[in-house]
Amino acid sequence: MKMMETERLAVTVKEANLPDYEKTAREFDWKEAEKAFSWYETGKVNAAYEAIDRHAESEERKNKLALIYSDPNREERYTFAEMKEKSNRFGNVLRKIGIQKGDRVFIFMPRTPELYFSFFGAIKIGAIVGPLFEAFMEAAVRDRLENSEAVALVTTPALLPRVPVDELPALKHIILVGAQGELPEGYYDFHKEMANASPELDIEWVDREDGMLIHYTSGSTGKPKGVYHVHNAMIQHYQTGKWVLDFKEDDVYWCTADPGWVTGTSYGIFAPWLNGVTNVVRGGRFSPDDWYQTIEKYKVTVWYSAPTAFRMLMAAGDDVVKKYDLSSLRHVLSVGEPLNPEVIRWGMKVYNQRIHDTWWMTETGAILIANYPSMEIKPGSMGRPIPGVKAAIIDDEGNELPPYQMGNLAIRTPWPSMMRAIWKNPEKYQEYFRIPGWYISGDSAYMDEEGYFWFQGRLDDVIVTGGKNVGPFEVESKLVEHPAVAEAGVIGKPDPVRGQIIKAFVALRSGYQPSEELKEEIRKHVKEKLAAHAAPREIEFKDKLPKTRSGKIMRRVLKAWELGLPTGDLSTMED
Ligand code: PRX
Image (cartoon, rainbow, N blue to C red):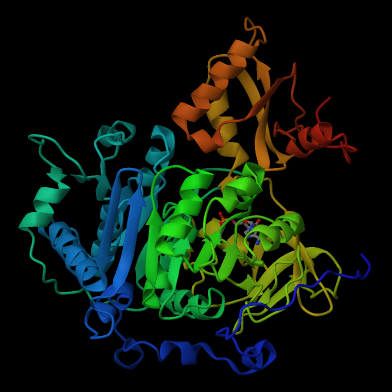
């Protein structure tokens, strides 16, 4: 690849928290960031205390708004003092039923204030939280609760039918938000228990390496992986909140991600609250009018979203934007997939804001590469590594490659928010660290001569659709459960709005005829058994699927067919 003249967008955010990148990158030490917290002296920590109680105990912030919650039916506001009280109560509820340090407490519910109280209450008593996206269906819920051996689950009566309680021996306690009437043993009414619980709580002080969170993420093979994070991650949540999100005392911040995904915890919970910033949470479904109204009504200043959302807003047109006053916005960011230069240009036109791309993964726990507010943006680039982190492009032997050569995007180990394990799967964990000294991201990229990184693609078959990671294997497994399906191969097909859509190639069992109705039925099966976002938008019937002699479906051949590209080496393909 040769050097290119790249477009550059000048700095528009003034007084950014990262004054001089080169200097900070040279001099910064993570030990400095730790000094913001008292545990740097005591050694004992609790991230929920640092995010909530620390502010609730300060004169300046105790009555400051921590959470502004709204959805089409509800609007509520909570100060840091109120967040402290609510999470204390929930910590006591969990203690009363016997939850202890290290137990897994899962939360499977829509974004509502109760989700956040539960989240902090569990962390305060040293439990490990597993947030599950509300759209998951039974199979997805079962896999995650089974693997983590969750002891308690916070959910709602509407979602409870998707929890196969009888098949999960470890799951002893179900706490229902919105419970009605008498409940059987092992079930608790959230609001009733909260009302009876004490507002004072003895926090469980833990070690910085003690567990805090498990987020499940999809790989290309096998079941979803439980990515395990510890309290120490908060250092990086806090510091990237300052540098990249550029938090200031008066900011009103909105992260559009659900806590079922890592962005919704690292940046929807920890980064803003560790920095004492007012955090907006919008429940309900995506709609351009609702979204713009949220910015206008709460005077959002810092906004973190995803390319797929920006593309949907772009598709909704410029006229919608004009109906709202978005002048409060001062800083806009994106994560999750490649951010198209076209979207950045559109953002400058309609929002008068540069959209700042950031790169990281569930496994990395926090932002590693970013376009800083204090830096020129090169549209199409993910930006430069944060100070304290070294990123490089390496080949499969671990040699660092020169600028413009494509290879593995790798990070020097360790960094504060790095995952500490894949739950009960040490082999998978080791795969990320197979080259000594490096974390291998699974993304391919190149670096330019100024150290900006440019994303090229995933090296595995993981599909990123609408900002969500979907493992083709999970979808294929669900497809072959349908009585008509003999074999299935699933790929990501490029899509202008969603980045990729899921396309399934399906071979039918004998006795079944291809038809549009059958496609619809198969799609519905995946939707109801796995998750709506994992259901194939396109299905194509084939007599036979390309397979290796060992019987593995060759997704790269399916992809080549789909894109009209050469199929490459077919030597391992069966006849
Ligand atoms: O392929 C990269 C893509 O999303 C993957 C990580 O997905 P997940 O663990 O779900 O975390 C998403 C949000 C933290 C990466 O391996 N990705 C993430 N950010 C970008 C990106 N691709 C291109 N540009 C980005 N800025």
